[in-house]
Amino acid sequence: MEINIVPSTQTAVGTHLILNFYEIQDKEFLRILVKGKDILYDFLRGFGFTIVNQTGHQFNGAGYSQTYILSDGHFTIHTFPEYKSCYIDFFCFSSKFDPEEFTLDLKKLFNTQFVTSTLITR
Figure 1 (cartoon, rainbow, N blue to C red):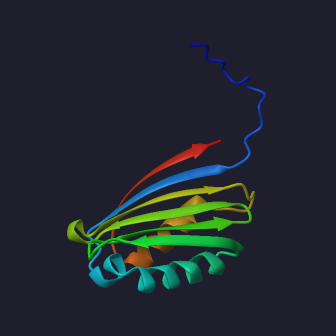
Figure 2 (figure 1 turned 135 degrees about the horizontal axis):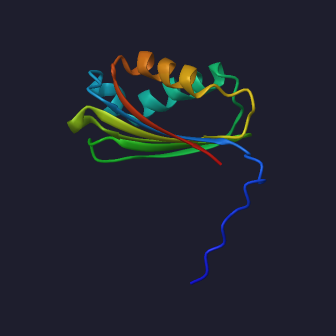
Figure 3 (figure 1 turned 90 degrees about the horizontal axis):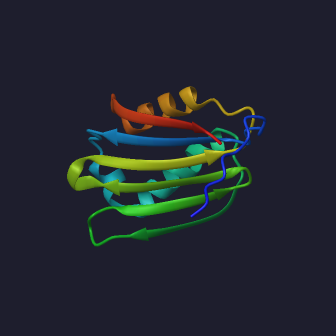
């Protein structure tokens, strides 16, 4: 297998943010897709994102997965109410995106202080 290394002159096109939230007390938000998807839809719109499509799957009482296709990226969440946690994969190619503000606002939305994050410039 051949691996090609990207030249250092390659311009970054976006920000990829991986977030893990723990100790979320609102189990209904984590458990019920129809509740969570509307809250997240409003959250993303509040950040100025245009949602062009969305899809989700409700698991049998054990959480859900929801994806939003944005005009400038994507947002995916997987919830685990039994662990009071959720996991987010977010990619954005807007130069105005502030990952710190985004993460802090999600912490407020989920009402938790426990989050880990990985930021990748792509």
